[in-house]
Length: 50
Image (cartoon, rainbow, N blue to C red):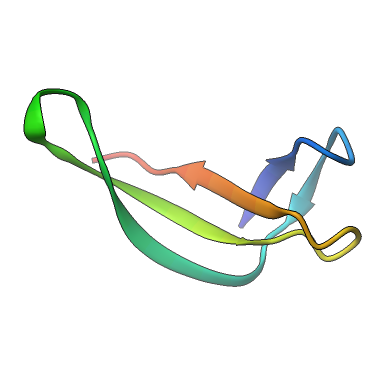
């Protein structure tokens, strides 16, 4: 899956992606993908739908 890398300022494929739960507004949880940028190694996040 693709996500935006803030350091490279471009969309890239997430490397070593893993689905996590993030805290949301009002005590809910939000699904997200986390991983690293293949070019610079920066941590990337992509928030998924419900």
